[in-house]
Length: 276
Figure 1 (cartoon, helix red, strand yellow):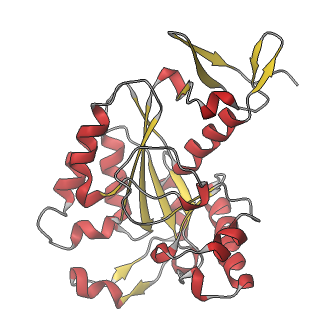
Figure 2 (figure 1 turned 60 degrees about the horizontal axis):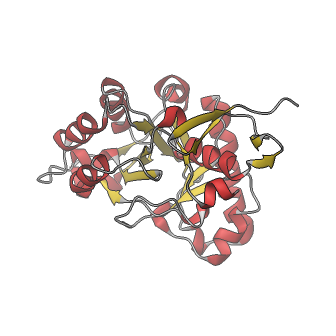
Figure 3 (figure 1 turned 90 degrees about the vertical axis):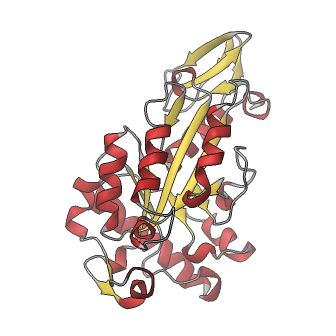
């Protein structure tokens, strides 16, 4: 819609800023990260590997001195009840290195398992190792996924041009300067701060990349009245609803199933779904 192209909308409640906290792998350190987010009223997006639930692996020993310990399947619904559960594949291969059939199996089976465990709609994904190319993106476009997160650091707060190649604003290690810029933004156009990382990194003992850092990040972002703390899939569904707005005889019509907020001059107007 013209509303989307002209950025003449806001996030729910008239807010102009959205923050997405996107963390990969589903290790037991997520339990502590959930506690931090809950304390500050933040919503995280947790990209889980369904084939690894309840297992351990030695790959993490070189980083933390302890093996990687993955969450149990039985705790997913309770642990992430206030957060968004997202796909990260069944067994974490680089999707660029496997067949078309295996790409689709890795994504679709992971989504189906996580949906059952979490009792959530799972329509977001993070590429294992960030590995993606035109073939992988084309395959994912044939699924029910709406959005897939890459790796890297764009340094900006723009809405993505390609939702299946959404690059984070920053890794959590470098987040604080970006948070300062983000919070200082005006309210003229919608802006999204997408922070990506791994909760196990906070156990590595590296200077500045520890639990004190994520506590500081969460304290800075929590309680901000003009910031919408939202999941990756949830914010994408909202943006798609804005895109779907249609002009009608009395103004814009919302044919979707969630309300959206648009700007008309100095006013912010809520558009509820049109009666069917």
